[in-house]
Amino acid sequence: MRHSSIFLAFSVLCMTQCSSLSIEECTHSDWFSLGLADGNRGTSTEQLNQYQKDCREFNLNVDTAQWKQGYLQGLANYCQPENGYRIGLAGQSYYGVCSSNEFVERYNQGHQQYQINKRMADIVERLNSIDREISSIDGKLNNLTDKASLLKQKNSLLNEKNQLLDEGYRLRRPDMRFEFRY
Image: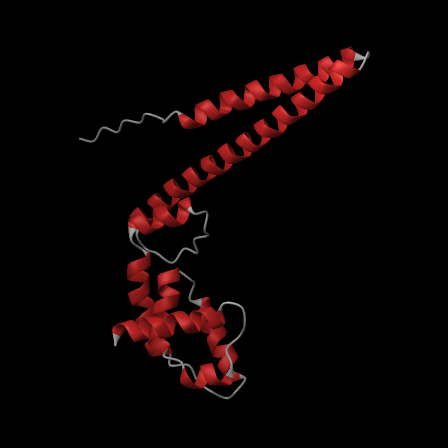
């Protein structure tokens, strides 16, 4: 029974991600499962307002109590500190739905690591681009007589490359932090 509720919630979730609720969804939704899915995703309670608005168009009501019960149970899963880290590391948004300071701290740690990883990927991409440009310049140097401007351009790219390599090294080096508590 529990697995069928989760499957139903997932199915409804997939249908509601991109559009408003239909008359069938307003009539036949398992509001507990829908709330559970919303809580597990860490959506804000504004989602309930959207469901109410959608169903009001068909003169139907949302079982708010059932949705809230499922939502709170889903939030209990979502607001685990390690989930906060995973969400931050994935670069996902956090909508301030957890009251746990540990969750927020772990989310911030994960998000900081996400930003470092993203910057490292940008550095690697730019380094590859610089290497391609340098190879292109080297090829042109072999065929041109105006080598001075190309050598200046090459030196500029080599300087940028060295700066990016230094930044990458600093980002990879873990910060050592000590915390003393009495």
